[in-house]
Length: 253
Length: 251
Image (tube, rainbow over all chains, first blue to last red; front, side, top):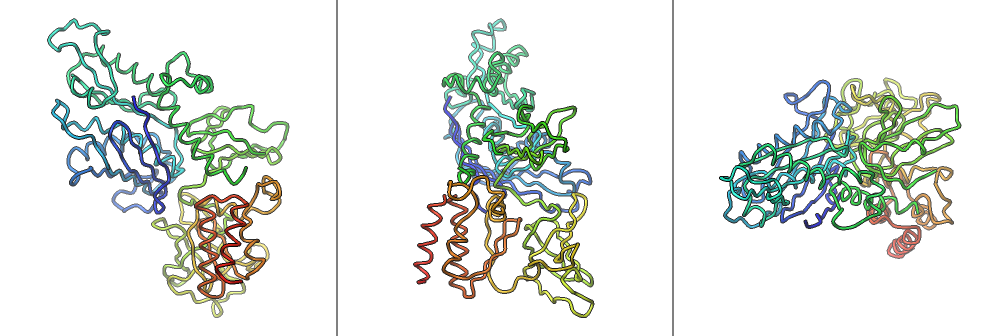
């Protein structure tokens, strides 16, 4: 799995911004808030969250609205919205790059884009220094069952791989997961043909990719080991923020 | 006093870092919240700063939108005036702040400053809560004196990051390391002020007002400060930039 790339706080006029690219997807995100809210969206006890997603080509459609609804309900649990009642937190995500389209069962599916959107949103929120309850990381997985006809396909024969072009070609189902830093499940979206035990298998793998294996959960230890196979999304997020903090504190040293 | 521990939202502050042996109550600054029963969790990403003497800890961040807090000095822009208040903006698109027309030094119904829309005011936040619009004041609550607050005439406004504003407002004694040891506050202001005269007002809301007498001087000082912020210049680089700016001004 390729290491994702991220740039933080590169848009001067936004309160927080980030660019994230991974597996051929590049998304630019900007966060503004807390700002004044329109009367009809105003919530008396918490901040309203508005998510706008713009596709790489053309104008937004049902697919983008669907993704927006997933992000909105996810972020409501992450941002401490009660800190800013009667305000608006606005998140704009512009898809810049997507992999070249090719023929596969999931060509029109919104899910392969979702992990990149979730990660960009997280980085932009961290860049904006908005109060959050926790961080989260997200991963997309493709499941390739030997054959959907064979009901007794063993779990071990099933290939689980991160979503990319090669994986999508053979995939029978795709799954997107997001976990908080403590390992709580935040988002689980699936599409395609699969059985519950396959989902559980994918869940375990996703948890491992996001926050590391259960044995070596202690963060300090994981960093020291530093082997590329051991890398997980949480570690990566921490390293990105560490780099940014060091840049910002440069004047102190 | 400082540590280099990076915290992400949701991380627990290690109890070994909490200041101990002090009878004062523990003070949690920006970016931290108390998670009952006895742990302290971060809500923003940044490095943890612990002040053992004051029994306080907080997280340093540089970016983001300014959230009004009582007693902060800000540069506000007047939007419009009503019979009793000037309605001002502290950060764009956020709730308007109210500045009472009589909250200026020795202002009475007859002698109060007339501020047109767009005028700049250097003010103190006298009340701020999440449920109400912030209120501004240009007089000290105890003495009734202006203490340098009031309308800002002439000059120009520059946008800088919130962290840089805090650095500019740090007094010498609060600086983590003295300037000779390479740490500390911004020296470019002193370096420039040795040769040229200008006025500066720093608002906690990421605004910097500069008046150098003429446009050339104002722009040169403002641009130099903006560059110091954006490129995060070290002390030596600041001195070089100051020399370059002075050379270009021909003084």
